[in-house]
Length: 135
Image (cartoon, rainbow, N blue to C red; front, top):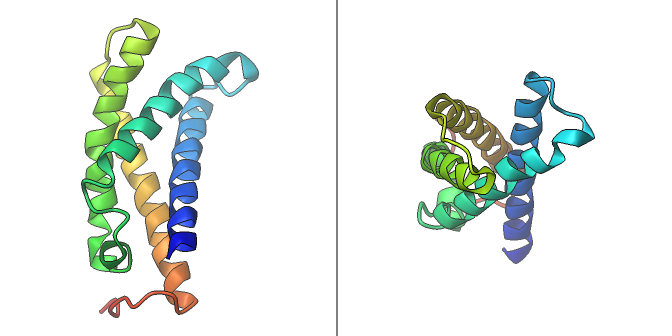
């Protein structure tokens, strides 16, 4: 189970990184000059996610092996992203823009649901999950 948990954690990190990169790319800010600003979103989002994810049970095998629980990562991210916006504001000494928090919440929740759904599907396919059938 430790190997699966490590894969899950690594996937969470990559999902957050991908969402961050996509966000900056949509604003045309994907070159090296924006790395510090990307870090000001990526690092706080990682911190907020890993503070809240265990509280939502997102590393418990009975939760991650049940497709009916895929709402949990989205809900956790709906709380983590606004916390990220506040942390980002503190890091950059800037105001917290509410629409940024909303957009970050929605995109991060979607990204995490996609990743966690893929994780469930791959583990189910490989027979590593004792998950109930989808229907």
